[in-house]
Every structure is written in C-alpha cells, then in structure tokens.
Amino acid sequence: MEGLLVPLSLVLAVSLLTLFGAASASPEVQVSTSKQIYQYGDSLSLSISVSNVTGGMAVLEIVDQSNQSSSPVNILITKPVSNITAPVPFYKTTFPPGPYLIKLQYAGSNAVASFRLVDTQNIAIPPQFKVVAISWVQNQTSSRLFGEHIAELLNTGVIKVENYKDQNMTIIPYWFKNDAKWWSEGEISDDDFGHVVEFLIESNIMKV
Image (cartoon, rainbow, N blue to C red):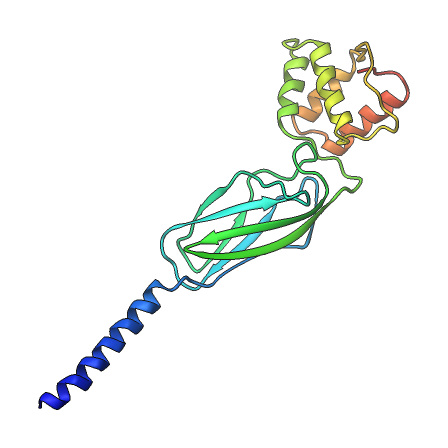
C-alpha cells in the first residue's frame, strides 16, 4: 500500500503542475484589420481574437513609419473575438500617409498587424472645422479667424492648391457663407466644399 502512495503522489503533483502551467500560460492573441489600404475619411476597423478571455484590458497602439506611436488605447476583452471600429476617421491633419503598424498587448501576449494609409483625391475635413464654419456663418467668429482655419487645411494638404502660400490679408466673399452653411449642415460633402475653396483660392477670389 505504501508503495502505491509514492506513484500516486507523483501523478497528483504532475497533474497539478500541468493544470497550473495551463492556467498561467499567456493566451494566443491575433489582431487584423478589415482591409490593408485605407484612405482619408475611412475609419480603422479591426478584429481581435484571443484563445482565453481573462476579462482584462488589451492595450493597442498605432505606430507610423517614423516609429512615432499614438497614445495607448485600452480595450476591454469580454469574448474570444472582438470587432472594433474607431470612432474617429483618419484625417490628414493627424495621420500622414504611409505604412502603419498596430501593436496589441493582452495578458502577457503580443500581436502585430499592418496597414497603409494613402492620399487619394478625396477630401476629408475634421469636424472641428465645421464648428468654426457655423460660428462664422452666425457672425460669432471673424472672417480672419475663419480664414486661418482654411489656411490650416491648405497648409496641411487637406485641401490642395499648388504653390499655395499664406497671404497677408483675408478676403472671403460674403456669399461664401452659403457654402459654409450648407457644408456645416451636411448638405454638401467635404469634397464639394474643398473644391469650392480650391477654385476660389486659385482664382484669387479668396485670400487667406
């Protein structure tokens, strides 16, 4: 009987070690994007898969080609597969075109995915510029301040005018408030608004 106790104890010890090792092992983690190429105005959409749900947070960072990293984003993982879409689209004012890496950490495991952001002909303007446009339309913001915001869109290449240079004056036609109002209310697109600005700048009708 005593001879059997030793093998049984060994079996029990090995089983406990195996169970403890399985419980403490880091889960397998994968991250992937919905597509490999995004353009301005698109929202990043990704899928996170984990082999073991710990109830903890995943930490996500976006790293550009110069190795500059975004602020970490905490994502609560409650199921094996999580599909996530960023609440804010890509804008040229904050994301330069080029290749990007997504780095994900979860419960001691790491995963990486990649995508490319390309600059096409579409114009995507951050929503905070609409706030300024509404204020200008309502005569609560000066033409000079509104013009400075348009100049920012030109300087960052959101709205493209070849050989554009900042002017020493601000001239914005009064009737342009109609376009600004329609755009701020969503009746015309970013593309339409941007192309009107391009035409007015290139024709020297608007100076900012």
